[in-house]
Image (cartoon, rainbow, N blue to C red; front, side, top):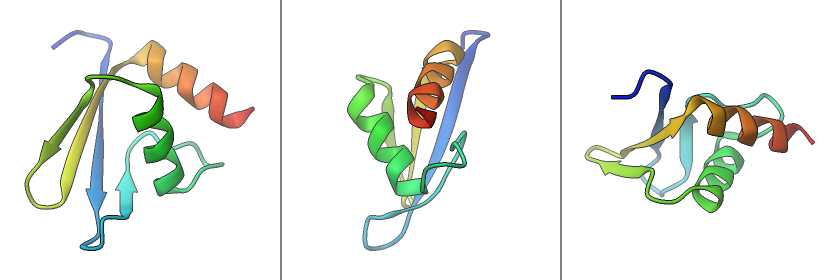
Length: 71
């Protein structure tokens, strides 16, 4: 794994809504942060078992997305 890579963990409720997600800016709900990540990234999402998922992004990408969310 690259040194500057960030893994953002996601947990889903049984109905498919996001209940927990890492690196979330305070201005966004968990679902809104997930929506921004999925619409702004490609090939960085991995579905896991048990209602979980994972985004693998560079630190620069995460910081840029957080900045755009704050604007």
